[in-house]
Image 1 (cartoon, one colour):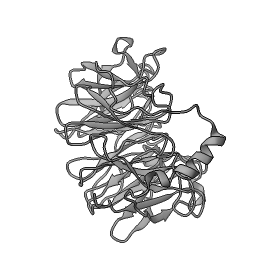
Image 2 (cartoon, rainbow, N blue to C red):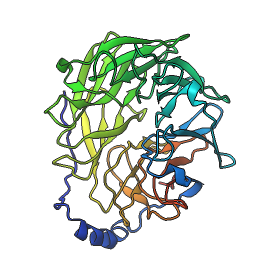
Image 3 (tube, helix red, strand yellow):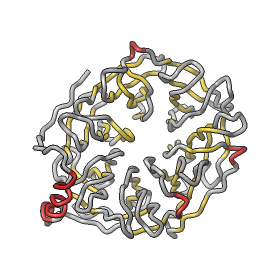
Length: 393
């Protein structure tokens, strides 16, 4: 099991909100003078009903080109919603959902399979009253692949991971078997959940949530460490149910959001706060064996409290967002090189027309543009969907 190493050390003062406001105003722009920048284009302004949504999921593009924006739940939309964005026209339309047939509260992220279909889960309701596993075929409407029953327990909020053989890998935390979590495979035609590993205290983790695959036969993910240990770990598990903790991220804080395969031999993720060495969050790079490097530690002026992992775009740079920090303390868009060099803030959100608090990860669509969402600001103070073109290196 590896311990994170860091090529960088930042001197971070104790958190003082009153002084921080002045520091951000004074340093936010001047500290990054001459760096590349972007101006996001707003495609959609969430209506008032979307206020108080967390919006932590990543946008997903299906095989037909549509980009889907899932909202798990808001104060006024208890069942959540799905929106579909046409990237050519820029038009966003609401996806009609039959909650009795599909269920409520979709996962904030969806995953595409080899055929371009998108997969997700509904957390509650549906035919079996416990949520469902659903599929959005390329060019089609959402359909139920499996409705969870009382005996199986609730579908949960895990994002299904498509497997090479056409099946799926999922994890659920709360089941009739317990609340530590379990790993399942779901195969056609019924996509009935088949248990292949039940989490126990000997595993060193509880409640596995974020999942990823790189096609090597392992399912990778993030989970909370055993009670009393604190922090988050990255693990992997094979189809035989053998689980191994690869690295514990404490004292760099809790690993949050998603785990992104950079397709360069590494995974990328971020840690939030609560770390002794990185109280405002970090960007980490880790190998499938758990060898981990801290690429960047946020200092407030250049962003803070990231809630999603950066993606490795087609130009080779890593692009991501922070939920706060920056010149106006409403978050930033940033980029850096995969070795940690060249960090720069591309945009400082001010919570006005282009919104603020970007909690979801970015998506590079087939048109080469980067898409994201904010949860605040905009015309209705409910956030926006935006896109921008990567700047020249």
